[in-house]
Image (cartoon, rainbow, N blue to C red; front, side):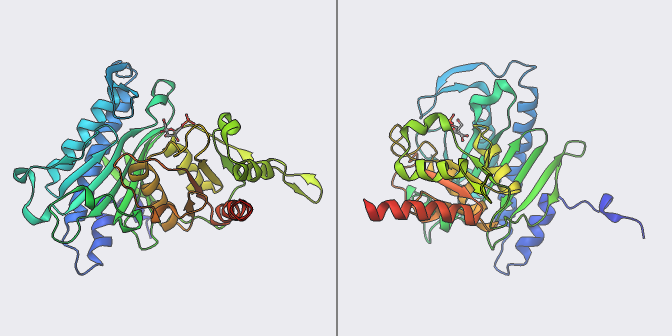
Length: 346
Ligand code: P6P
């Protein structure tokens, strides 16, 4: 029997369509929305690959809502995603890291009542790493509009547990999309540039309760950490087994997509905690913490602020930040136990 896997490629579009058809109420709108996100990721991937050659990595001379210097790729990636999402006809509103205000899609660009989704996204997270050739990525989350809504901030200022899908695309040694539409399912797809399709390469990604013993945090901020954080990570570094040193390994890229992707594949714990310097944390709730927490939880992991489940947060501002710890369930549960102990003593 010949191996058909080489001639029966499961593309992302085919895989999502099959998954959605399992839901009787599915209209195909989410599938078409995800196809438009795929287009955006393919287009950004080509721009990232060319960046070094066509000198796209210089500063664009503009600053974004975070007050950070925007690099040309940031600006380009944002325009690409706004256009691809708008062209789907399925999106009513968008929130981008690069735009202070919510983007409202005009009626003429809406496919009538099918424009029933709100998309939150960071078009190019980790962009400070572009010149160094470090993996960067796009992160997105999708909400179904609230009943009767035509698209207001109320449709996105809600718990992340109400998202219907979330994903990221990592522009690294290969271009990899990781996507979940809930139901405890997470799948990974790799872009085959020869045919321009994302191909299913990591079906049903699962995180064991305890994977590789890795911690991932910017230790340069340790002087600002709270006592619980100091205790927890100190214990990982001084861990012993049978009286012999057996510390966790340290890995930190400084690009959330890269650090979270490794954590999903290998296990361990990733953290960007709130601390004395970043009192609300650094990472943004809507388009960094929520999508990554949605994916990690659907793969069997956990995601917390230390004291609260990330997906239960209720943001009140579009660009709100939060501390976050995510990864293998047992590692994150141990972190939460340390925070609970310190809370009792507080
Ligand atoms: P630091 C990149 O700028 C980013 O937003 C995330 O991708 C990454 O996890 C974090 O900031 C890194 O921040 O302070 O460690 O450089």
